[in-house]
Image 1 (cartoon, rainbow, N blue to C red):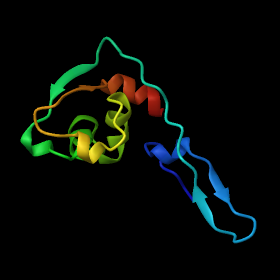
Image 2 (image 1 turned 45 degrees about the vertical axis):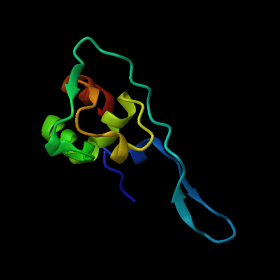
Image 3 (image 1 turned 135 degrees about the vertical axis):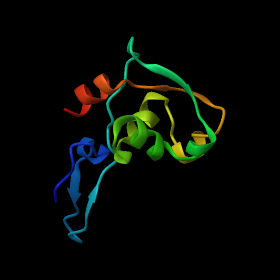
Image 4 (image 1 turned 60 degrees about the vertical axis):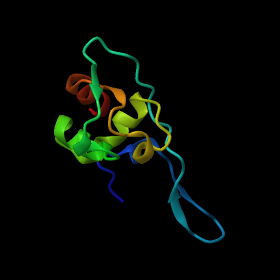
Length: 101
C-alpha cells in the first residue's frame, strides 16, 4: 500500500492482527506544530464553512493537507470546528513544505 507524502497516514503504523489477518492503521501520531513568524491569522469565510479541505486546497493546492490546519488549530473534529467567523491560524506554505518534505 502506497501512502502519499501529504497524507496524515504516513504518521501512523500499519498493523496486522495475527489471528484474523486484518490490516489497519493505528491512530496517527501527528507532528506538533510550533507557531511560526510567517503563520497567518484567518477568519473562516462562508465558502469554507465546515470544509478545512477547501481551505487547504486554496492555500496549499492540495485538499488532502486539511489535517495540517486541524493540527495547527488543535481541532479534534475539524468538520465541526471549521465554522464561519472563527479565527484560526494558517501555517505558511514554507512551513508546510518543510513539514511534509
